[in-house]
Length: 308
Image (cartoon, rainbow, N blue to C red; front, side, top):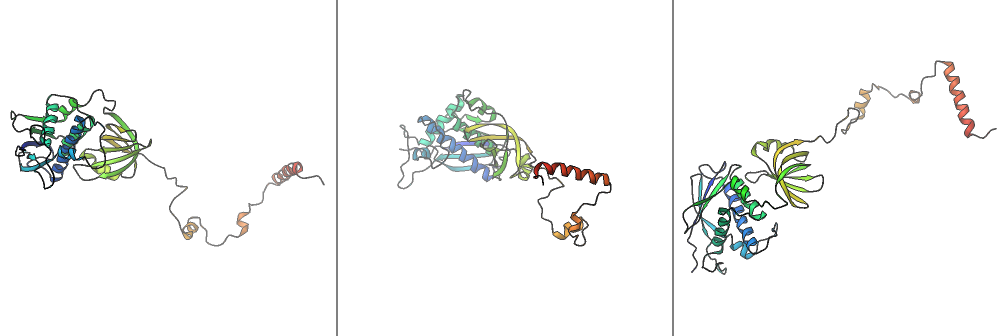
């Protein structure tokens, strides 16, 4: 018999989880938590290649199949239970009859509690879940039929779960490229930077930089922060500093703005047609200069013209 009545208690704290949780923050948190469960299940099956697009496989969906059964304020306390069977869809169970989603969550929390290093895709999803409820976010997980102890996940704990032997460890970065917006609304505010070497960086940033970010969309910028390459052509970064790069300097001699003929005539003091005489230089005042010019022309032309 499937046990689907066991409930998991999540205790959420952060800038967006005070006396309740913003709806979009809760939605993002749950989506990333489910993503962590799917990636953890895949890692257990030996499939360590992160799936970044397409629909999850059926068992991956089952590994993250929970329903929200209760919510109350503390900061934000949510209770989850495994999803119920649906018509024509069998519930995935483990050998003990427990839903696959609960088994996967127990395995993930055991890894966190024991301080085991997590695969990068799992770590990324847990980190995103934490940030969804605020830059200072943290959350606790209390499993059913256990000791009643809550396992807390915060930035300090996550830092101990990151793989130390990974060549893709986060490191300080400076990136120059063109900035474009991906998502302007919290909690998933993100921008993209197409770097000069062709790498597409997906970047998060703190709330206090939002006014500056919106001013610099489609501008060439230099960002500083921490992050890492995900693939040869993509990367993730947390922006800590941002500055614009001047793309050109407008010289007063030239302008890319059109000017009317009347405006140009007025600026140059032209009030009537000048005639061809205006293109002819004034005659030389010094007769010796004219004679010198004639001798010079004669010498030059004698080299190129046949003699008469």
